[in-house]
Length: 202
Image 1 (cartoon, rainbow, N blue to C red):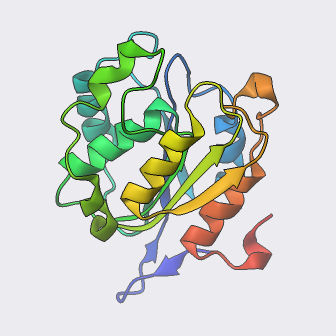
Image 2 (image 1 turned 90 degrees about the vertical axis):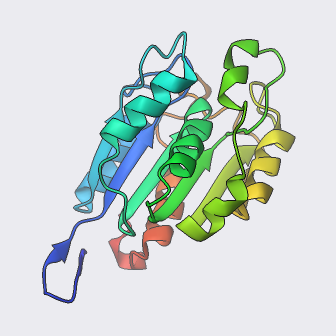
């Protein structure tokens, strides 16, 4: 169910999904989440990030700035892995934006051991704590057995954002090959973030 503004116009919620390193919009649980949200009448875009096998921070910044055109309280950002620091960078740079929510899965905000190619994304990141006032609701999900991004790094991201922190005991990096072609936890948390009634969560 969509809300209406003071003029009686329907305000359609919008979700942007941002994938991570070496991934694509068709991978993992992203298409499944889009289908579930679309069934609720919510607009969804899975953004095809530029050159995900050799990502360049400035290229991702410019792409997100161009493609995330909705920047209001009915707009929600969902991201996985490298996509998480991508949307954090975007939100910090889009200083006039006031997002309804941000849901980050297996994210990080500092150099990841063994992945030096991604170090540029965390360089000069800035005070991410200021997003506490510009993103109304924030949730971070991590798995204790994530072999790609250490659990403690995602936990630190949640702390810096003052976000709800959700732990999965055995989720790995939440990849399709690990069984995550669907991710009900993300859908349920996002639906709650949007204030959808229980009966609306199908």
